[in-house]
Amino acid sequence: MKRTIYILTILIFIFSCQQKQNSMDNFMDGIREDFAKQAEQQNKEVYAWESKIDELYRLADKNLKLGEKYTDSIIENDKTLDKWKISNLNTILGEVYYDNDSIDLALNRFFKSQELTFDSPRNKANKAGCYVKKGNFEKAMTLLEQASDVNSDFKWYIGNLYEIQGKREKAILEYNYVYVQDTIVYANYNQRIQELRNNPEQLMTELHYKDRRKRTLILLKGAGSDANATEIGGFELEKK
Image 1: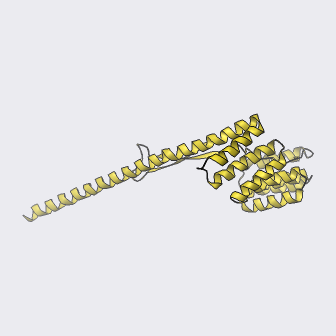
Image 2: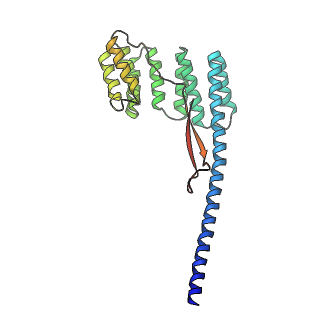
Image 3: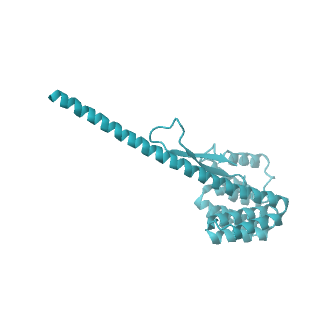
């Protein structure tokens, strides 16, 4: 009798564990399904936003006024945009203006971007480029030093400015400061150092902005069929 009760107790315990495991599996399946749905919606929004930026570039490259009208139309009529996206649109249009030597129009957009959010290192570097074009090197240097205090990558532009001023050795010091931090990631800094040493007279005449139109999209990704029991999903990066 005792043996029978013992066996029944074990069977009940095993059944209870199986029920709990089934309940946990169903719970995790529900979470994974919800995450996959959210990921799909999130990615649609990311692609929709990126298509707006692509169209801004396409129109602005065709005609600056078309790019401006398109940007301002989105800002005025798309009520889904938050201040960060509106700020980003102003930044992008400002960079396009700068690339087309419309410096005052560019500065105006960079200040609008700053007013909406904050004066980011990118925004400071953008404004610095405008002040270089205007011949105000002191103002440009102040902005670039502030940017590099937050992110040393921006020493690249300080080096550029030293080149513009004919201060080759100071430029090399700025490039090398960043290069030694990671000789692989910042290989282009060393490339510029070698160029300056081999051709000391070939100095920059304006700030050199690198790959400003390249973007990295952060996309959500649901768990695959080979996912482990606790995995619900993750993210992946897509370069544009």
